[in-house]
Length: 402
Image 1 (cartoon, rainbow, N blue to C red):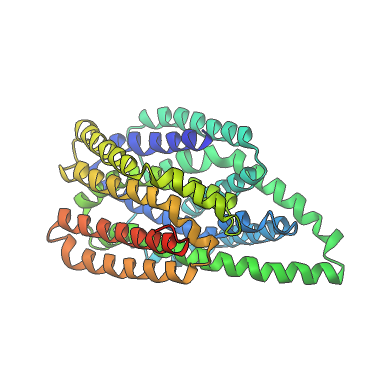
Image 2 (cartoon, one colour):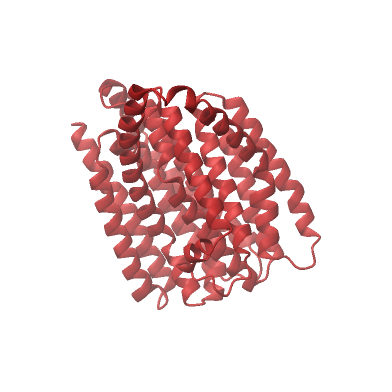
């Protein structure tokens, strides 16, 4: 329920803000938001998944998790106020953007803080608290959207402040105070040699798993969003506006998919094979029905987009929405199987699949998309989908399910 509320707040932002923009500012917003999402995936560094993987096994995982989180946040603060920030953004081709680099990284810090906070609250089963925080974010965003509506000219920096910084200040404060409390307890435990050895031993395991998860995630996210980076580089304003608007729906689906995936990673273990098989029995038996629902929802959503989209967008926007929603809807269904890849230590296989997906996406983007955008977008999404289906089949074979 909390995930639905937070997704609603994200949808509110991504659906309504484009109506306040021109085609040029929408293209800029698409590029900046894309960079924010990609850097969020990078600076999470796989820590949320690793924490869910280890917290039930080792008590010291809470301390390791906090130390790594605080290290990442300090790194981001340094990037915010030094030339490092400009270097990190250079690869996203935002040189012509009016964006304030410090504001961009403050927004990134608050988004990373929300990801870390939600993960800790999830493991502590404080679902009501997550729901309240999600509702507060929705409320603040709704009020500030009203403020933006009355602005004569809407700048990207105003969007960052109102939609990605102010609503998340309470959440970031909670994460910071919780982290400081745990860190202050460090001196009471880390002075003992045995504790130091335990900490370092499990820290290495935690970082290794996080790094593999990080590589998998970054390759996957870049495969889905490389197209925006390329269009930004090529200054394709109209296409950026169309695709940026369409991909707002991808962001909402990604939140839902990641939430369910992390929940199942925490719930199932390979040693409990009977529970996994029961999960698959209940799920795969209805897979065809779920796929039908995914296609139906995608058709309805693209029809709605055609009717309500801003008038500066082209007919490509709703078609992009349909292709993408069907693809990621089925990928979401596959993810309720492929989450077992982490449990089965299929990290190397996932990296290989995601690397191939990224290479194929780059090739299609650079040699097909601008010549035929609809065909190029269809091929990119097909490559993403086939990789997930292939991984799901391997996992089912490993379980002797097929």
